[in-house]
Image (cartoon, rainbow, N blue to C red; front, side, top):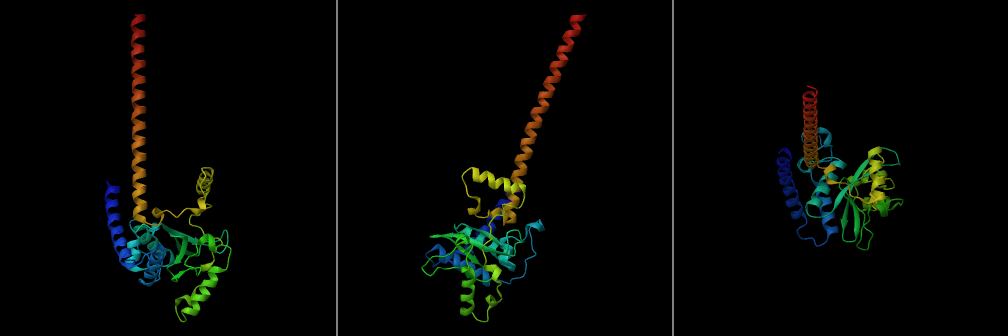
Length: 262
């Protein structure tokens, strides 16, 4: 019942996100244009300080609606961009950037699917990465190149005196960018190996929305707990019945043996 109630609450939030995203993209005719418009809107919406709001569990961070209302830092704004794009049917997920293979993550952006592939947008600095021929660059295109830094240098010339002048070069370096940190622990590494054996490429997966929407995460968690409890109750009930039946059979056999001996 908690999961059902929370689901309807999440649907209300999603309706608000969808309404705003549709208003922002109303006159645009391509996904790439819609992605850029939503990214630009989130960049200009509220401030850039870390959003300390949360829903029930503080460790899960703010919901996209809370970010929309109060703003936030890179991970918060990226969370909002991805949620708004997903609400209008555009696949999108967060990507975490690290300066080296085993370094801590220092920045978060969004990668979204558009008509020609995937493209990266950054709502903290209002950056995207066009190729000049109508296409855009995704994480795989930017990794191992200096095209990210070149784009930032270009925007600094186009926007003198604006926020992008303070953008660190590392925020546009995608050599070690990942949507899901498959090396995080034994469980994630095992999941990656399993997916590879099944013929999938884990590094191409979008980051699941439930990892960036506290309400959606709690819905899945409650459903999982419900199924686990139901399964445990079923197995426990079967076990008790089997034990009772076994005890009854032993008792009957004992009585028969006693009567025979008499």
